[in-house]
Length: 390
Image (tube, rainbow, N blue to C red; front, side, top):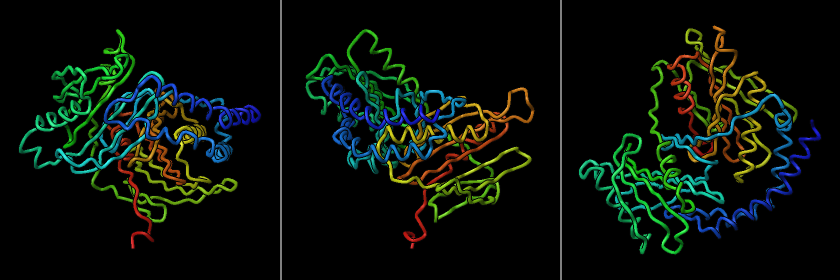
């Protein structure tokens, strides 16, 4: 089994970078670059994949035992959960995160875009904070009109079909067109106002009879998330040395573990009456990782190792993000549904540079337990180090 793992890592390290660069070139030839996305800005760095080989190879060996766990199979993620924008949406693959400072038209902060693209499709989720005073005075139609005008100006020459529509129970606009210089590529853009922000959903693909159905399926998967408030008696545990804070039922117990050269720091807090357990762990990886494929592999290997240690059964995985940092959510069960002592759990693995965080929350199978697990994970945030805070 170890030999299989080594061969797999060699293939990932040597062969895939070539395929990635080919994929980028074929996507560019197809013209799948929708407006407002800066979709291929990151692709100019595609040859950095070659420089990442040694780092990726080293990271894989750190978690090689997880790679070789034949008994842990992760479901393929189909949903991207964006804590920062308080929404979720179905995506074909893990999106990249882009930030721009596009002030104007009532925009008051940074614009965040989450972008996935392959040879066949481009999917973009945008979140743009609005001037609350102006929004209250003029209403959501002001923002919808402003950004519709902006899209029309950017797609100058295109025949844009515009209609009113509803997304996630919010009134919005739907814009449909083909690219002015390439009628083989269709673009469908949904815009709506919620949570004092403008959300833009963009779907770009090859023109065809099934394009509208695919675009509408993407839009209908969009959901707004409301974070449940946690009990007032819970505490906020903050650690400036390891740069995080999170809400917990009680003051956590700390453990420092060592696995070879890897040091693991773990904080555990529980509420016995509620059968609620919260575990936060932290470790350093050997080098900072900024390659999307390497990040995804590292998160998946970490998830397999985590589930294997707890003998848990994965039910669902979701792409996620925390303050722009890539994350992976795993929903799992411990024990069978007929076992009164069994429970459901949610884990969130976060990679921030060379800092690797693993959050794990286990509760009863009640709906309230699920909401509390999600709220606990969403309470996690990064903080400044003790040195930088001075």
